[in-house]
Length: 448
View 1 (cartoon, one colour):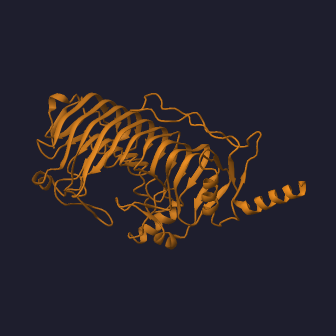
View 2: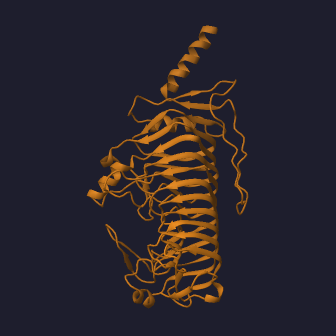
View 3: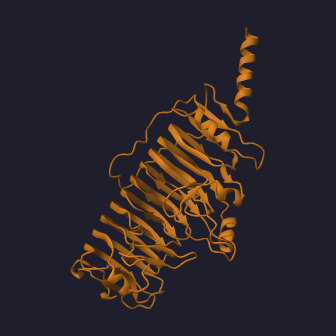
């Protein structure tokens, strides 16, 4: 009888194979999910963070030989420990085939090791998950309900970005994958991960809700003459009640970008270095789409060496062309931005502290004035904005430019204190603004 039981157990372990080991009752040998809460401000509604996990339902994923494809092993482990368990990724793993993880339910993932992706650029060109928004694509997609992914400060996701930067410089039609996509993720958290050398945007949070993102460390830089561009930290799209907080971002492009239909989002405690700012938009670039962005609170963030700290960018009401390789054609969309607050933003050596641009992509001012944006900005507040400009536009410290008298309403500024390297008082280029609502300091508004 004992021999039969032993034989059955051995057969089970062989069937499970090298991919994973199911934990047995007793002390666990992995880091439990950390207790991280929104802090100091609270989200628009509570995020479920206390869900229970079975301490005896644990799947440790064993990687294959170096450079082999671990996608199947990771997927199998997540299926086995879905619905109440924990999957442990504490080694070095390589993903060489598309990985769709949108089936997750009530599961923790302890990614305390390292995940990388095979450097087969030609293969990935034909095998990426595609999203019909700004050509977004990726090698893996995460989603589900009550999902907690954590790295405890040691977990790494590495995108091998340099190969993609160089390939894109040689051929601008090369599609660079996004490092991480959450699509249809409802409830849970993403914490304590190091994201390194993303080929494109670091994170795309789409069609998701009720997520806490915290204690992240993002770093992507090129080591060659080819620029590492379009490396947004987070882009939110059709998502509600998201918190992004207490993280460090060193990269190019937007630190956070609120894409269409981003609502009830709190961003706090970020340190963004070398970015294009914390940005609403761009919006209105698709003529068939009605874009909504509302209820954003952006609190206590430090912006260093950026082109703009606080930014709203909206396309005009007709086709415009934003320069680039290839150029980006957009404009003609409609919608609104409402109830957006930038509160306590520290500027350190930035070009501009504030920028409202309803002429995004327009070749010149007259083109924008002839075709004002169909995306209306209302109830936008900038307060407690202070620090230093870098002199790139000295003495101009910001731009607040609307496309028409009717496209902006109730744009306010309070307690804004900026200093220029020249010592000249800051000037603010304004168009179609109610200047009585703008406490910008310095000279105040000048014509744009």
